[in-house]
Amino acid sequence: MRGGNAARNLSLARKPGKYGLGYKYAFRSRNVPPCDIEDLTSKLPAGSRLCGIDLGDKTVGLALSDAGLMVAGPLETLKRKKFTQTANELRALFEAHKVGGIVIGLPLNMDGTEGRRCQSTRQFIVNLIEFGIDLPVVYWDERLSTVPVE
Image (cartoon, rainbow, N blue to C red):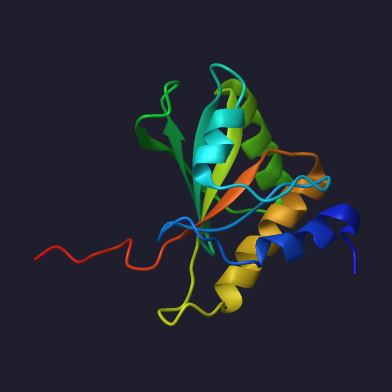
């Protein structure tokens, strides 16, 4: 299995969190222990932002927090291409917007189990780390995050 340290750290990410509904899984490469969203934000360099990632089959939706980490808004939607092209686009955006951490949606099944999309999301993060984008990551449970408007 390729991945080295990043793949070993993936096992840390599979331990369930205890910090409420949103926080479920978090890890960072290079043997840094898992963190929750509050821990992540307290460790960010001054002035850096968080980037929210909504990973789809054909697109990658991005949201960016303000510098005070109080609110986030839409940034851009990237078309997924070959991984290296997508990763280069992400790297450029992360550098341009001073991103210090990533919050990525984890599409758990309604019963809390992980399916194919969760595996794909986790592998995407491992690939980013192997590519050299080594930012702290929090997996966010996105069950029921899309509620139909009545």
